[in-house]
Image 1 (cartoon, rainbow, N blue to C red):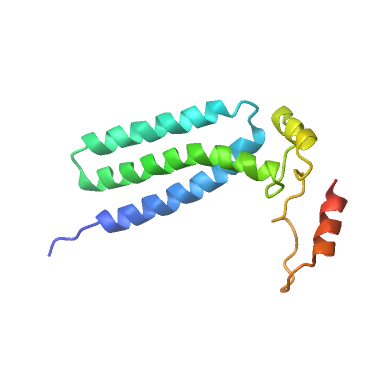
Image 2 (cartoon, one colour):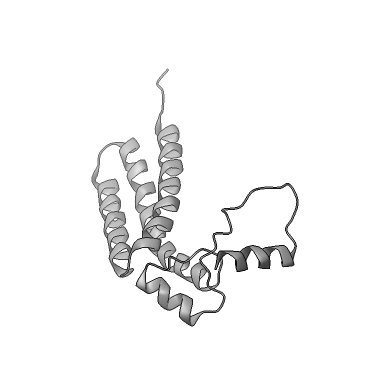
Length: 138
């Protein structure tokens, strides 16, 4: 019986691509001043993996390359979406980043408070408690 590893490789490529993309988009968007640079880099990497996927004779490598291609293309879009999350206060701004400093000035909902950096307590926070948490972070 011949074993087929395409499914396992595709699953691992998807898991690591999404995980890496999620972490890197948040970190890179937070630190970079010129957002077009990581956007173009992600588009180029995605295109490179796409070409690799089309040209490699290996089905396993082709599947992994295609998954990484689409992941990088999606990450290019996520840089813009992450910036919009910051504008709406759904993700923390970095006041040391000049681009984020402008966002904090222009958008009243923008905050440096990280909504994910709080102790879990097993029940919902009230609107007043969330406002107090946010006010304490400024």
